[in-house]
Amino acid sequence: MHKHGHSKRRSWTKIHIAIGTDGEIRAMEVTNNAVHDAQTVTDILAQETAYLTDFYSDGAYDTRGVYDALANRGVIGYHILPRTNAKIWYHGNNTASPRHPRDENIRVIQQTSRTK
Image 1: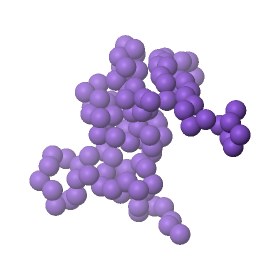
Image 2 (image 1 turned 90 degrees about the horizontal axis):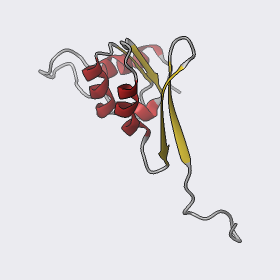
Image 3 (image 1 turned 180 degrees about the vertical axis):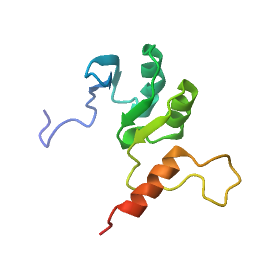
C-alpha cells in the first residue's frame, strides 16, 4: 500500500463464462487484465460443440470481430447490447449486402427508447 492509495501497476484475473439456457457452465476462459473481453470469444466458441442459436452479452463484446466469429459459427440470434455511443455501420444507402444485425438492433433501440 502506498502513502496515497494503491499502486498503478495492479493486475487482476478475469473469468469469462459461457452459460447454457439450463444455467450450466458450457465454456470458460481465464485471462489477465491485459486481454479485452471480445478477444476471448473465439476460444470460448471453440470449447462448445453443440449447435448455438443465440448469443447474449454486454457492450464489451460489441465489436466486428465478435460478430464475424458468431457468423462463422452459424449463430443467428445476436443479443449484444450496443455501446452507448454506438453508430450504425452500414447505412440504408450503402450497397452492402443485407443489413447487419447490430445495425438493426441500434435502429430498434433508437425507435423505442427515450432519450433525455
